[in-house]
Image 1 (cartoon, rainbow, N blue to C red):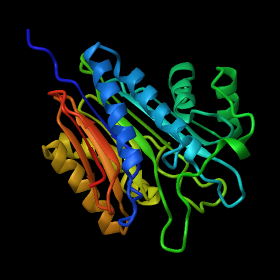
Image 2 (cartoon, rainbow, N blue to C red):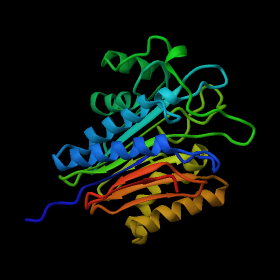
Image 3 (tube, one colour):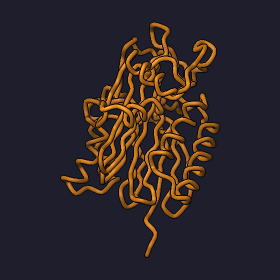
Length: 288
């Protein structure tokens, strides 16, 4: 009996500048892709791999997520994350979460330990605390912003992971500190199931970029819809959604993997930090 294909894709955000090098980030993503590939070869579950790899990105301080997040206009660190599994479409998300090392772990708690999909603010903190998600003792000294906003841009650096495991299960996970200079209380596409994250029997999708446009396009779920209703290939679907976002005036990137191991990592911005573990075991990584 032939072995089922496995694959994963990681992104470290589509908010890149042409004049900056991203060697550390790409090396880190490549290292994580290798670890993910090895875990897939051992038969580990997609959800476990996705959470582990996203948490590693949150803790690295290299991206505008987790430790690398920046404070909002009120000086507070409000972070968002979501996770979704196919084919049963279980999902969990947290929005405007303050004071925890790994928002993606808190999102998983919402998915697995509550009847809800999205919990925000103090309610998200309460459920995370009650399930012993690691807390941050001193936020002012913990966070080391990975990007600094200037007049040229609203910088973004969401992280994400999509996985197809050896059982044929798909999972998508996404985490972010949000756009720089955001108003306190602002929530983007990352914790909105269907906008920033999606997984079903066909495809797993994670998005990065200007969240308001991804919400208006219902971007992540639209990738699956184009495959289901238009008969589009995975890459055609991803390109089509990015064209839609561009027509609205937005930019960013999308990573996706489908049920047969095809992968896509596309963007309409200056670039997207990403790494891929292909079905044949090959690892590729880059910004463009």
